[in-house]
Length: 369
Ligand code: BGC
Image (tube, rainbow, N blue to C red; front, side, top):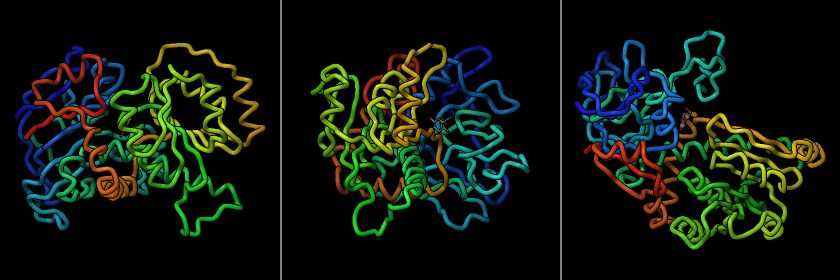
């Protein structure tokens, strides 16, 4: 069958002929791929600075943002049936006895670094006509999310970031969630970046009641600024407003959700974040460049304003379940905007353009069926 992959040794990206997978053992599920999202991590793997082929292979099939349809189930599969729509998760646990996160089902926090990620590190991904997975790693997507469920995996990044936020805010003993109003009500959040993780993050923040501001590069109006403003967030371009103007417009910044992977803009916003502010990094920058910042200001603010910075990667089972629930909510509140996040659907033959040429649009998707 046809798949899109990389040969890390030869530094090549191409179509690979991969054997059609068969279910071995009774717990397996065979899934026909419908759509796979292309993301920055895939592009990074194609520049050979990241990514690892599975043992015994000289290639890695790409793809970790996937939507598929169940075509066969093993005898022991209880919760899925042929025809179900499913979204697979990405990360698999390491085998270390001492890795408590992995031993408890939280491989997103793997402490040994020996985790596996499908389509990224040590196991083939989903940019193939079919794949096999255990039912525990497959999440059932309702049919009415068929057009947008390829966005579940990127949304899980925001879900984990927010789940961590609420745990983190427990450090404020005077705060209690009485369920009476949205948890973010009365707080201001800034999203940096208008890629899929940024826009889906903005949706999540708005749905939690945050007054949400999006800070990005492109001057407005543009496709992304219009999309973001149609959600009810306010868009500012760093090319049109100075940092000082931006800070004055927003006032107290309680939360920053960084989703651009560019330290310079992160630092700008960090330097104006407010008292007790929390800054979340989700973007993964390329290595190599030196960035100079006024580091003493960073340290001073962290101390004098009781600030906190954390990074977050991947997501757990809760993140996937929440993402499916939230996607359903977003579809109710912003049906048009949600659809507009997927800016292009392509055949597998377009892989070069999508993976190797400068990125365009918001989320581009490869269609397999
Ligand atoms: C994926 C995550 C993964 C991370 C690091 C991201 O693009 O969405 O699931 O953990 O890359 O490999």
